[in-house]
Length: 71
Image 1 (cartoon, one colour):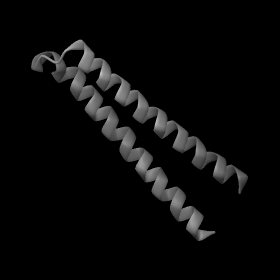
Image 2 (cartoon, helix red, strand yellow; image 1 turned 120 degrees about the vertical axis):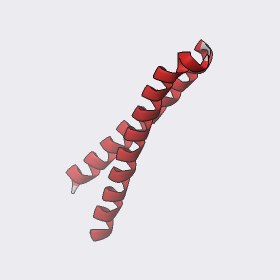
Image 3 (cartoon, rainbow, N blue to C red; image 1 turned 90 degrees about the vertical axis):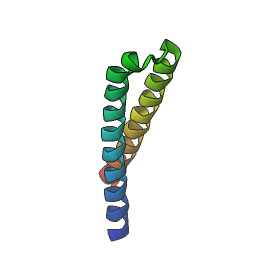
Image 4 (cartoon, rainbow, N blue to C red; image 1 turned 30 degrees about the vertical axis):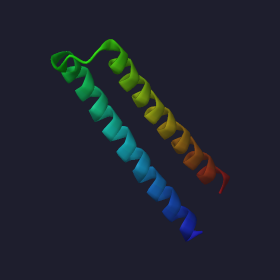
C-alpha cells in the first residue's frame, strides 16, 4: 500500500511541475511573441501545445483522485 501512495505523490508532483511550467511558458510566449515577431500560426501551435499539457494534467489528476477514492 505504501508503494501506491509513493506513486500517487510522484504523479502529483509531476502534474504540479507540468502545470506551472506550461503556465509560465505560455504567458511568456504571449508576452514575448509580438516582440519577437512570432506569426499567428506559431502562436496557435503554442496555444494548442499548452492546451494539450493542461488536458494531460487534468486527466492524470482525475486518475489520481479516482484511485484514492476507490481505496
